[in-house]
Amino acid sequence: MAALSSTQTHKSPVVAAFMAPGGEECEALVVLDIFHRVNIAYKRVSITPEHEVVSAHNLRMACDCSIYDDDFSFDNFDVLFLPGGIPGTPNLRACEPLCNALRAHNEQGKRIAAICAAPSILAELGILSGKRATSNPAFQHVLSENGATVEQEYVVRDGNLFTSQGLGTAMDLGLALVDELAGADAVEKAKKSIVYLH
Image (cartoon, rainbow, N blue to C red; front, top):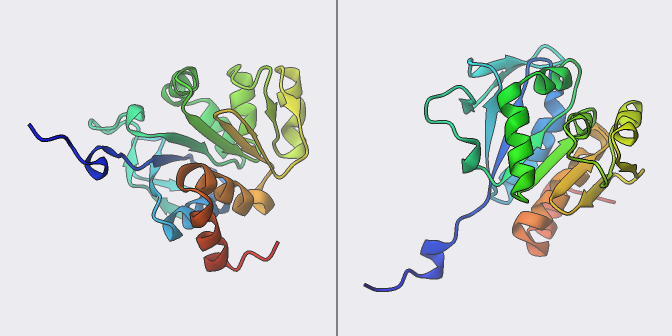
């Protein structure tokens, strides 16, 4: 039997962005927009049985799938991404299947990203204990109380974990993940595409 070529064996990374009722839609969409521009695959995943959620600013957000779909598996994703927002973050935290998947994903050393209030979920699950991380300033005490070292950078990476402070740093989080998943050339392509002037 002929050996498979590298193009046949290579699997491009896929990101799951978890959409909760009351989530901060722009934090999700800014990051996903950057992925779209450099052809990083992603899915908008509802944490409810419905394929539509209403965001923090009362926008109806269409999702590609739900965690309750018969064919859904957390294992199909290389990155689990948690946007923030209130009450989106508490709704994500209350989703037991998602929280179990975050623990398992972390135990496997697979990538997790969270922004704004959402890093507090990772902290409460024990995932940030002994790690460097950041979040929205209003939630940084949750990180420190659960063993994280809080940094004030736009994006903090510690191993497989990526955390960021809020909507104003969403582009930076997106670019950091592009660098991780697709490399420096893709970052430059994305920066040019979005007119990133930093």
